[in-house]
Image (cartoon, rainbow, N blue to C red; front, side, top):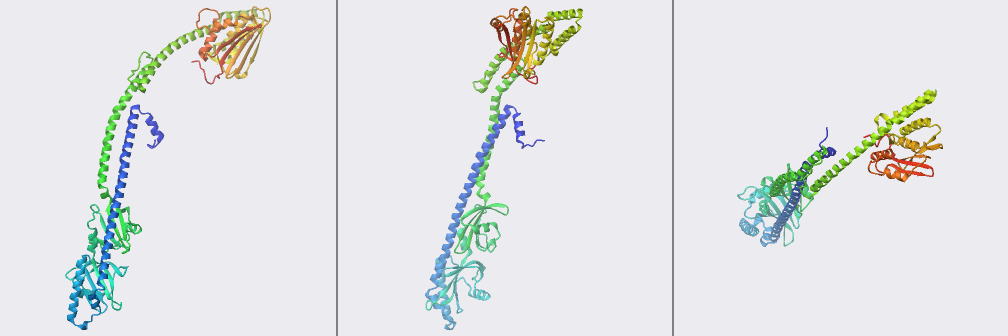
Length: 606
C-alpha cells in the first residue's frame, strides 16, 4: 500500500487527473498557501509587536514605581535626618525619670506634636518612635507605648527581620506589628536611624519610622495589567513584601520560575509558563533596597484584541478561498472546454474521419492549437491519399516480383534442360540442376517474407547462376567478392537475381566470347553497396538511368529494373535504390545501395 506522503505516488496520481482538476487543485492550493501566508505572517508580526510594546509599557511603569518607592524612602530618610538633631529630641535624650512625672508628660506632649507634625507633612510615614538607651520611649500619637515596650522586651530590645544597610540608616522589609492605638496588626516597613547626641556625638538611642505596606502598594494600585495581571514586590530571598492581594504577603516565591528569571535579568520581559498558562513577566530591581518589582500578566489577555483581529483575518481568508474556488471552477471550465472538444475531434479523426474540423474559439494558445490541428488533418488527409497511391504502386511491384518468382519461361526452360540431361544419361548433372532449381524457389518463396538477409539473396543468385551455367555451357563464369559483415543485413528478396538475369540475357548470351560476371558487396558508412559487373555487349547507361528516374510507370521498357528501384525506395527511402549504371570500356556495372540493417531489428515486412 502506497504512503500518502510518497512524492512520486502523489505526482503520478496528480498527473493522472484531468486538466480541469489539475487547474482546480493547483489554483486552490496556491490560493490557500498565499492567503495562509498573508494572514499568518502579519499575525505573527503583529503579535510580536504587541508583546514588545506591552513589555516596553510595563517596563516604563515598573521604572516609575521603582522611582516613586525610592523617592518615598529617601524622603522618609530625610525626615529622620531632620528629627535626630531636633532640640527637643536632643533634650529628652538625657532625660531622667527622677526629674519628675510632670516633666515627663510635658516631653511626651512636645515630642508627639513634633512627630505628628512631621507625619502630617510627609503623609507617607505612619508612626515614629524614639527609643533611648536610657529607657525612655517617645512616639507619635498612633503608638501605644506600653505595647511597644512589651514588644521590645520580648525581642530583647532589638528589631527582627531582614534589613538593608542604607546611608546612615537601616531599612527593614515588611513585618507585622500590633503596638498601635486602637488598630489591629499592621504590615509595616521600618526605617531606623541612630540618634546621635549633638553635644558629645554619642549614640543615645534609635529612631524608628514605620511606613505602611499599603502606602507602597498604593504607588502601583492604579497600574492595570489587563484583567488579572498583577504587580508584586519581593526581596532577594523571594519573600513577597508588597502586593495588592494582601494574602500573598510573606509568601516565598523563590522556587517559582518567574522569580528565578526576574532575579537574573532587569528591565526585560519574557513569556513563561505559570501553572500551565502562558504569562508575560516583566521585572525591575531596586538595588538600594534589594527589592525586585515583578509584573505578571496572562498572555491571552495581552493578545485578546489581536486575537479578535486574527480571527477576523482568518474568516476573511476562508471567504476569499471559497470565492476563489468558485471562480477557478468556472475559469477551469472555460479553459478546458475547448481542449475537451478538441480531444473529441481527435478521437473522431483517429477513427478515420478526416472531414471534421476543430472550432477555433480565439487567438490564444488553445485557438492556435486548434488551427494547427486542422492544418495537420489536411496534411494527414493528403498523406493518407499519397500512402494509398504508394501502396497501390507497391502492390503492383510486388506482383511483378511474384511474377519474377514464378518465371514460367525460366521454369519451363530449366525443366526442359533437366529432361534433356536425363535423356542423355547425364543423371548427375540433371540432379544437380534440379537441386539448384529447388533451392532457388525455396528461398525465393521464403514463406511469404518480403525481406531476407543478403546471404539468403546471394544463395538465390548462386542457385540461379548454377542453373544458367549448366544451360549455357562455357558461356560465362561468375565470381563473388562479398564482405562477410553485410551477410546479415536485410534486403528485399529478388533484388540481385533480376540484375544477374539482365546481365546474362541482355549482355552475355549473344557474345561470342566467354563472359564474366562479378558480384561485389561491401559496407561503406553504414550502407551496403552491391555491384554487378559483366563484360557483355553493354548499353547506354545514361538512357537507362533516366528511364529509372521516371515517375510514371508507362511503357514496358526496363520495367524489371524500374520495379526493383521503386521497391527499394518504397521500403528504405529515396536515398537508396539503383544509384549508378555504367557501361563503358567493355564493362557494365550496376550499383545498388541499401541501408545496413541486421535482421534483429529495423525494417520489417509491414
